[in-house]
Amino acid sequence: MAKSRTVTVSALQFACSDDVSTNVETAERLVRAAHQKGANIILIQELFEGYYFCQAQREDFFQRAKPRKEHPTILRMQNLAKELGVVIPVSFFEEANNAHYNSIVVIDADGTDLGLYRKSHIPDGPGYQEKFYFNPGDTGFKVFQTKFAKIGVAICWDQWFPEAARAMVLQGAEILFYPTAIGSEPQDQGLDSRDHWKRVMQGHAGANLVPLVASNRIGKEIIETEHGKSEITFYGNSFIAGPTGELVADANDKDETILIGQFDLDNIKSKRSSWGLFRDRRPDLYKVLLTLDGSNISS
Image (cartoon, rainbow, N blue to C red):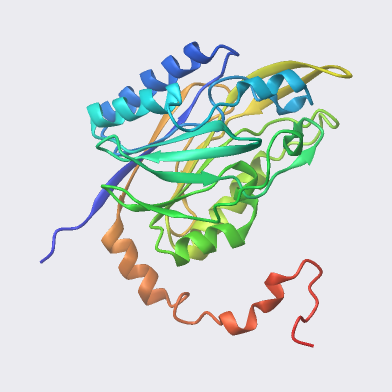
């Protein structure tokens, strides 16, 4: 009988300062700790090098962007991944000539840069003014063949779109990863999206019969904006879901956390095949998804 393919995944959760070296050191410390717990693929939260700067529309914040090539944090994480033999998706603010992207590179267990994904869905609301900084991603949804599994990685606002999850799984993704920065809403302190946020991604896991890993930051961050101070309290609640959407591990909204989940990918593949979701799909009927207004594009 063939040996099962078991993979151990981890989601990290921590509060960021606005000092790059401090945050990268925290990320490395937690990656090492996750490795000690047996993790093979370790997810760090979105834009972990500093505060979530998109609370404000500030010209000087473009100085936080760096080109992918020779990016110091990516290089450091490549060395760390190679040393530990782990896979690390690394989120960063990318400068590409005159374009800017909210991007991620996937580092394989030998330190190889497997490729780049640029965030496709760019939000624009109070406290989350990403359209000021980021071009819409042009990579399309991608999967990455790592040492341990074929994975799909998308970023924060992408996680609200079932089309993104399905696109990655259709390309063979066996696990979905979503680095995130989400918390309170500056315009409405009574609005708490954490349960909605979790349920949507649990639905992606269940609808595609794949595990899913979400990493979010914690802590209060205050940014000077053009209209005064803006404040977001990030609610953490990082989690790992199994292939029916069940919660395997989850964090609270306050504590630095290392989550661990283990999955038998071959067993999950068999269950995914036998459930019939991908057998019974009707792509010929889904053309309406190519429209914005739901019109019948064939008429």
